[in-house]
Image 1 (cartoon, rainbow, N blue to C red):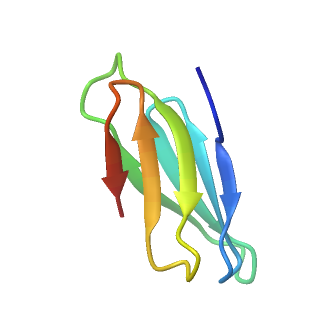
Image 2 (spheres, rainbow, N blue to C red):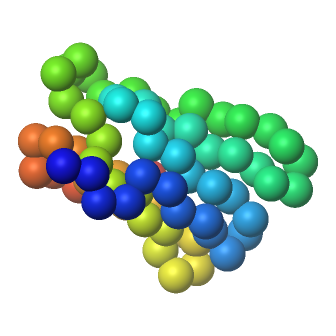
Length: 69
């Protein structure tokens, strides 16, 4: 199940999870960055969340793991 597939950072970056990919949209510049893709096609992103200072992005996956970026 999905918990939170979008999260705004305090630095005006929007993290967006789409299937097994995470993209960042810079609202100031309009740039899109492909941050990461899960290795296994059957896994998917179920949550993204920025740290308070926007230093890190936590990515929750369908296999119960959390990756920090």
